[in-house]
Length: 359
Image (cartoon, rainbow, N blue to C red; front, side, top):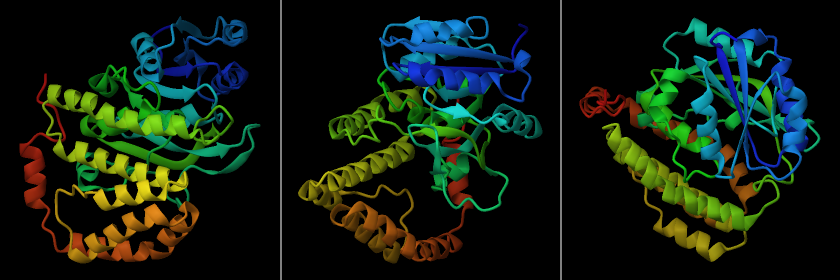
């Protein structure tokens, strides 16, 4: 094969029963397969994964390694990737047949876009569609974001691993993924890529399926594992700060935003697990590290929302948020309307928050 256009990296650990469908979904793409390389990284599986991939021997590059977690598996795949574009696919998910074609068309049309994310359909264990990962997307064909949007707090849709594609030149700036990300390694990429990418494009249309099944800790409510993941995210901040220091990026705002997100996860976790006192304690101690102080009305609403998330049943809380969302939107529009952006953007540019000084 000549230099491939796409490198598809599939990481797997004991997902042999799903892996074949994932590989088949790549092999059945409408995009020319002569321009695609498939790299399957087996992170020390103890099931029949190696046997199942044998029938794809000529179509894929199979890499077996000792178990080291998702970050080490992705790094192993990235180090072997030769394509100018990289797409990720989890072994228990699959793509629709036009996924690579659509992504390639958008990369070619928008030459300053370095990252493309797309929506996914949520699947049950047997592969049946249930709902979309991101709801209420409307009729918009795509949305584009950049670093300034990210730093202003504009919501950039985040999707699971199988909805992510990158230009290799941009991805290399973030590698290697820290080994501490044994799970949820894509959360590291979601955090750092907006700081080095020229633009990020999001496609609301689902181009693949994300499977919920018994082996997902989030689906079987394995509270011990979920709590460990939240604790691990706190430790991951150290690795993230080191990367930002190495890249000479002003890191305070991003790290604070991540800490706020972790604290909110703790509140939701304790509440959903019936530990109301722990949830309430986290809510009372919750600190908003906003770089720009919004009006008192917004801060009061935010504080009420945080405390409510600790004591109200999660389903009821989310319903309440949907019904009061217009108040939040009105307050934020009022706030940003009276704020002059120029000094903020100058500060961002002067501090190199959106680009690296490292050559």
